Every structure is written in structure tokens, then in C-alpha cells.
Amino acid sequence: MRVLAIGAHPDDIEFQIAGTLAKYAKRGDEVYMAIATNGNIGSYRMSKKEIAEVRHAEAQKSADVIGAHLIWMGFDDEFLFDNEKSRLTFIDAFRVAKPDVVFSHVPSGDYNPDHNMTGYLAFIARINATIKLIETEHPPMPKVPALFHWPALGLAKYIPEYYIDVTDTYETKKKMWFCHDSQQGDWCKDAFGVSYNDMLESELKIAATQAGTPGCDYAECLQLCKSWPAIAGAYKLLP
Image (cartoon, rainbow, N blue to C red; front, side, top):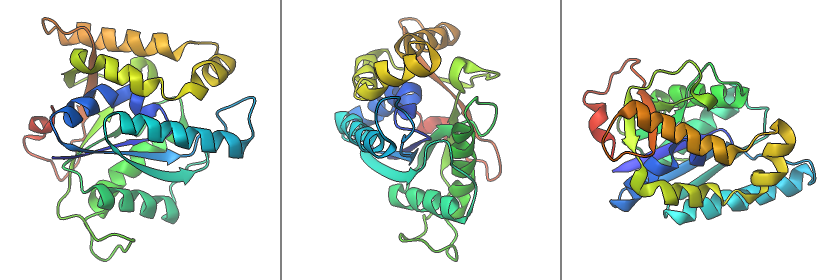
């Protein structure tokens, strides 16, 4: 099976869905990690160019942990908009990955506009990537894939529909997360005064409690995009 995760920033995928991606990779599925922006404002100490290069390298290192393919879109951090260029770039990312299943942000309700926009552009691209007369570098996909949304940070106004037990891949998820070393002490604490490491663990434990599955200590949660065309039996695509 072919799997595509689309995050707004380097490290979004790791925070939200890396445990699930690791499960796919573990069973031999082909995994793609697409990142919309280059993270070029994520530092108080480096220049935009310097931090963008660092974050690209960190994203590649994380993808390498599970043998995933990295798709780097390169839009400026906090300035991702819905326009022809962004739509075509997202469409082409879909066409490169040719996914059976896609994971991305919820398209509204998140604190960060890049998160919302990435979820929206992924929603648009899932159908447009199949349309022959929309031309990009790669040929159209043969089918519309299933699309799942992960929650906004803090599980805000989010009612999960599916829980993925990632207890067995939690250590892999953390390893991928810690590849983003520039964000651990430099950015997250400076910008928000919080530890994203603590938030990551607490949200996984909350989801595991909600799941109520015996032996599940850590879980990731998802909602299925039910917009037409509906994908029958989409839940069967989950690991």
C-alpha cells in the first residue's frame, strides 16, 4: 500500500502521525512525508536561510528513520496561501506519492493558519490530482484516495473517530520527533514557553485512554473526510 502524510511544517507529521506511519513502514508499505513550508521562521538565533536548511536536513533525517520518501514543497513558513502555485504543488505531491490513503491537518479550527491551509489544500488536491487536464510535472493519479485528518494541537474541538494503537511504535515516533533538534530548546520554549515533548506524550496518553483498548498506552487519533466521493471501507486502510 502507498501512504502519504502532509504536514504544514517540519515536525508536524512527527507530532501527529509518526507512530501510525511507522506501523505502515514496519509492515512494508511505501510511505511518503510531504512538508508544505520550509520552517524558515522557526528560530530566534539563526537567519531564515540558515534555519530553513537546518530544518530540511532534520526532516530528511526523520524520514530516513522509517525509510520514508520526503517531499519538500518549500513555501515560506506562515505564508502558505490558496493560489494556483500552491494548488499545483500539492496536486503534484499527490501524483508523486500515488497514495491509497492520505493523512493531514484538519482544514479549520487550528491555531496556526498554515495548518488549516495545508489541510484545505490536501482536501482540494485529493480529487484534482486525478484530473487529466490539470497538468503538473507528474501524470494524474488513477483514483481518489481516502483522506484522514489528525487533530488540531491540544485536541481542540475534535471528536476522534478512529484510534491507532502506537504503543509498539512509540519509541520510533520519539526518535523521529527528536530528529528536529532545532525545535526542542531553541524555538518551542522561546516562542511559547512550553515543552512540546511533554505535550506529545500527554496527547498520546489521552487518546489511548479514550480508545479504551487493553494494553494500549499510546494512541493517535483520526477523523475520516466524508466529502464526496466517499471511500467505502476506508477504515480498512488503517494499520
